[in-house]
Length: 367
Image 1 (cartoon, helix red, strand yellow):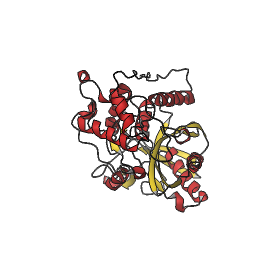
Image 2 (cartoon, helix red, strand yellow):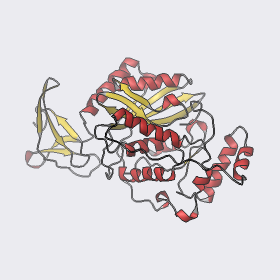
Image 3 (cartoon, one colour):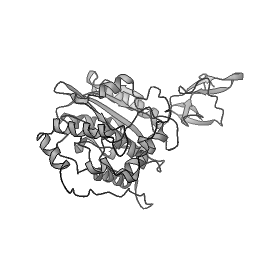
Image 4 (cartoon, one colour):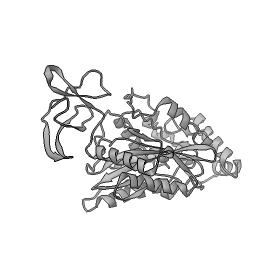
């Protein structure tokens, strides 16, 4: 996140490691891009990507050359620092001309232990992110394309742990997903905010967490109250309103909130992340309306109702249609019937593509 809601302060001398040494070769992000999986409604649109290129009125720069950075990206990063830092070129010149720079620390990647509770594990992940520190250079070091398959984004997350460089909010979301993949009881979903301050719009994203009936978040920001939240919130709306109240401290008004679907725990999935399954123009809604919409969405999420819809398949059989697939995705596994749910009887079946359990009432199409 950029702008007034962010704090000041410099990085921790990440320039030398960003430049990298030639002996290590280029990282994966510098390799030719594989054909990415397309996005449905969940990916970032071209208009949205262009809007975020000038987040908060400042250019949003991304390193697309991998590591070590190419010369153009390297000079562009330092040029941006000289333009926006209060001391201008003096700071950049002092760092770049220094004969010796302090060797930056490389924090160890956290390892889950059976003795850990889920809140303890989430805290260990957040502590690791804080040790990486927030990236104040103005250039995001790792390219995150929202329409890329989850498997590709997990490779980028591995690269973050290898390079051990400061990160921004979007990188923190991908890293948080990667580090929580081994905990199936922990549901992860993206939460995006669009805010307004002093004539400019700002964007921010955190990783929402749901576990054992409580909500929380992981993330990175210049502001400590706009990133991680403890796993103590009883409802999704309580968590969102906590972020909204935090924004008010910095005179930011929240305009939009976007919430995605649960991210699969399968790191090799070719499914892209659904970034904006629910979009709320909160600035035009009463809090009671926002709460109602959030809680309805949260109930559907807990039932893991996916983007697929029930249709009538060949021979009159029940089938699931997935929007990311062409044609009819016929899924006919064993159907689980659960009585006494929501005042009636529900049936569940699993989509062959997104592996999401979808519910339907027996009086509907596929009764």
